Length: 505
Image (cartoon, rainbow, N blue to C red; front, side, top):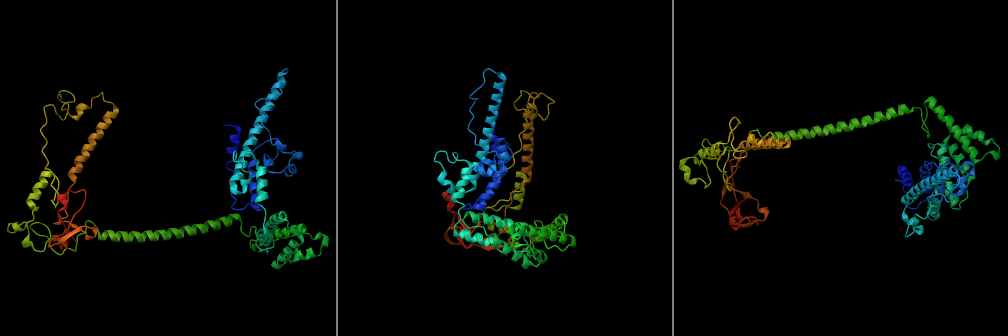
């Protein structure tokens, strides 16, 4: 990266305030101060070398008034790649000329970097509509200097209309609130007066003096100082002299208030020290934090109580006291008439088509390896097949010869010493995965809800086919009457499945 880019990057941390709406005098003055802060940080010998590159945003008269020995700030031209006139006879003189030319190139590039940053900062701080008159369709704003941009904004944006003038005059003559420091009040009035002067309204020092004397007299705290002021000759009773007198009197009163602990905070420090004030603020903040924490803890405790109450009502191990029928001694299910249990041979004609006796279910459980209760629409899993006997070459260890490698051989025969570390790692992972699957298969079970048929809601848009006389036994042993039968219409099911009747609750 070159010198120009380095300069731009070093200035990016300086913040520029965005101007909303019309850029008035106060906003432009603040913008200039922010630009000065950044431009003054870039060292240069241009313009006396005491103020960096702030000369590019000031007029010649304004800059020479503050520069060393009245040296003007210059906008450099490109010095070119090599000196124009080089002494070919004297090597020492030639080296000096080349070194000076390199210094000129460095100064030129540093100025370009500072100017580019200032130009972008000005354009980005205001609405582009205020700069549209000087924007080039080909190069944008690169053909104008930062000073020309600010001058244009002052000519088109900082002009005050009658509404602005009226508002500024109202602010200028607003009464003193007795809490603002006199220094701050006078500085604020000076800024307003400068804007009015540029708008063609002359300064009114006499009126400001009369108003200020009235305000301080109404406060009742400067009677002695004002009495001495009235004894001065008329020529000495000017606005600058009044400002000095009031500010000095205010400083005395502030010191006295601090010593007697009776200060009322008139724009400066009162009776307490900065450390004490910080401690008070910290204690207040701690009280707020404690109050918020206590409130949050109370809300959390209330939520936990509600959660525990809800969970206790639905605890898995809690016996259900809402059952209306005891367990049947034959089938271990709940139904109203134990004599009508389908486990009894006398009720064999009443058994549903898919009914399985308890003995059959236990046998199926022993065959499959896990509990499986058959329900409507489900098929039992295939029985667990016994593992075939091992072949002649299958062993659990390598105590004997395993035969040809890779044929009916155990996993240990595959893990040869020649296998890489990664291969052995993945082999161990496969073994662990198989073990987890085996354990999970032994722990899993399919559970039936014990309902004797299926229910759907009529709000699901099914096609009703008629009334239903079905009575369905639920999981808790209760009986429920179905209202209608309907067709289950779905593109993913076969036509035969759609014709089955579903019972509506």
